[in-house]
Every structure is written in C-alpha cells, then in structure tokens.
Amino acid sequence: MLNCFTLIGQNDNLSTNSKLIILDQNNQQVYASFEQSEPVFRKEMLSRISNGSGKFWYGGEQDNLLVTYTQSDYSNWKVVLAMPKNEIFGSLDRIKTATLLTALIAFLVTIFISFLFGQRITNPILDLYKTINRVKRGDFSVRVQVARSDEIGRIAMNFNDMQVELQNLIESKYIYQIKLQQVELAMLYSQINPHFLYNTLDSIKAMADYYDVDKIGDMAQSLADMFRYNIKNKDEMVTLREELEQIDSYMNIQGIRFEDKITYIQEIEDDLLDYPLLKMTLQPIVENAVFHGVEPKMGKSTIRLMAHKEGESLLITVSDDGVGISAERLKALRNELRKQLLSEDIPVSAAGGGIGIRNVYARYAIRLGEQFECEIESEAGKGTRVTLMISSWNM
Image (cartoon, rainbow, N blue to C red; front, top):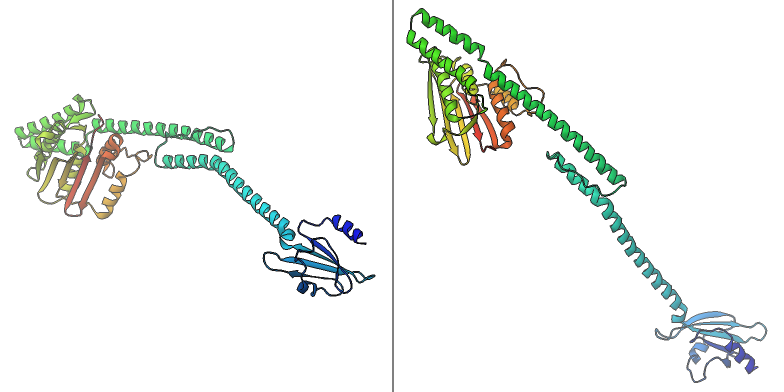
C-alpha cells in the first residue's frame, strides 16, 4: 500500500513546494510526499484537521500555507494538501504585472501616436491661424505654405486663392481712389472759389468807381500771380517758400477787400523755406480761415501762419480768432477727416465747407500714411487752429 501512495505522490502534478499527506481516522500519518525531517505538518496544524472536509491558512508571512483536506466516506482516512501562498498567487501577480506593463506600453504608444498626429494636424492649423491674424492686421501679401494634399492642404490652397483675389480687389480699388483724388486735385487747381472770385471782381468794380487805381493794380496783380502759380507749376511737389508766396498773393487780395479787418502774420523759421510740400497745401486751409472764421466775425481779426520743426517733424499751424466751430460741427469735421481713404463717399464739391481740409488730409495720408497727422482745434466764439504734422517724406 505504501508503494501505491508513493506512486500517487509521484503523479499528482503538485508544485515544487506543495506537500501531500494521508492521515488515518486518528489523524496519524500514513503517507507524506516529503522527508519526515521537514517540519511542515506540526502537531498544532494537525490538531486543526477535523472530520469531513475543510481548509485553513497556517504559518507566518514567510511560510504561509493553504491547507486543504478531505475525508473518505469509506475509510475515514484524510487526504491533506499544503500549498505555499506564493505558489497560489504567483501566477496572478505575474499576470497583474504583465497587464500593468502592457497598459503602460499601450499608454506610451498612444501618447506618441497622438503627438505625431497632433503635430501633423495642429501645426498647419496654427500656421493658418497666424496667417489670418496677419491679414487682419492689413498684410495681404502673406500666403500659407502648402505642403500637403489632404483637407487641410486644400483649405490652405483655397485661402491663398482668396488672398490673391482680395489683394487684387484692394489694389484696384486703391488705384481707383488715387485716380479719384488726382481728378479732385486737378479740379481744385483749375477752379477759384466762385464766392471768392465774385467778391474780388465786385471789389475791383467798386474801387474802379472811386478811381483807386493803385489798389486795383495790386489786387489784379495778386490775382494774376495766383493764376500763374496754378498754371506754370505742374509738379505736385513744391517748396514751403512757393506756398508762402501763393498765400501772400491771396492775403493781399483779402487785405484790400476787407481793408484793415484782417491782420495776417507769418512766423516761419528760415531753414524751413526749402522744405518740400504738396502743391496747394496752405491755401485751402487759409481760405477756410478767411471765409468760415474771419468773415462772419464783427470787427478785426488775425490769421497767423506758423511753421517750425519739432524733433524730426515739420509742424505747420494756421490759426484765426474768428467765430470758431460748434462742438457738433467740429466732431463731424474730425470724423470726416478720419474716414477710410478707400471709401466711396469722397466730396467733389465745396458745398457745406470743409472740402479744402479734407482734400489736403487725403493727399498727405495717401503719400505718408501714419507719418502724417492733422489736428483741428476750435471753440465757438474763440477761433480755430489747424495743425499739420509731417514726420517724414519717402522721396
């Protein structure tokens, strides 16, 4: 019988450290699959084995065993198996470790793939976003680099095509408005304010009635000089000296017409006389001062024209102590000056006043952009001051 138990122990497929023992009905050892010297089954453990079947943990942390036993109904003998805890859960721990390692590798691979796809998708979108921002700031020459043929690449190609069409449209519109400004300037050169011409001729007639030949001669000469300035000088650019000569002729006529009502004062630094200006820069502003500021005022008035350098900028100021401008009219005039130059609504007549300053502002703004500023200051009953600031010329 012992040989039979030995054969069973050899073919029981037990793990290396598992122990098998067979007990009789009195819990006396009949067979053990280990050397008798091994203190595996101690008396206190055997005392916990009762009739029937059962299981319990035995031992400490290092040698903790799961003891299972079952009793035969025929012989009342018991078969007892003791298996170490680490052999029971070892496979589970390995599975858990392998699962965690697999999950970690999958997580890292997912991050890597997401990063690659993210770079491939988000970078072109970010480039497109930056390009749109540059277009929004007014740079219509920028284009998106197209290096792919997917949906994002097609969006970039369509955006570039839209940019080409938009730039062509803006350039054609800009050229159209420049031509419009040139027509307006030509009209300004060729015309003399009908009101001014009528009053000048009326003054000539009145003085002729009184045979005041000298004054008639002065007025006629000044008027001739003004016509001559418009006709002989076809260049758009002139010097400050030439503009002042034109203003002298104009104010000579107004001085004779209004007698001693207007006092005209120039305060010009000598080294600025050769400074380049656009033709007909000063006359529209001085003319506005005469007709809208001085003429409606009772009593004497003064018109002052000043020019001086402030840093790298030339400041030209035309001021009068006339009737001034109401707050509402001043606000409207300032808004009119700051309208976009490409707008359709560009005045072509002098109705309502202000066309002279608007014309000067538009011509300089087209040429100089942010290097030019025009400020109008006025208060009803206290006069008006118009200041032109020219920072630089791109000659």
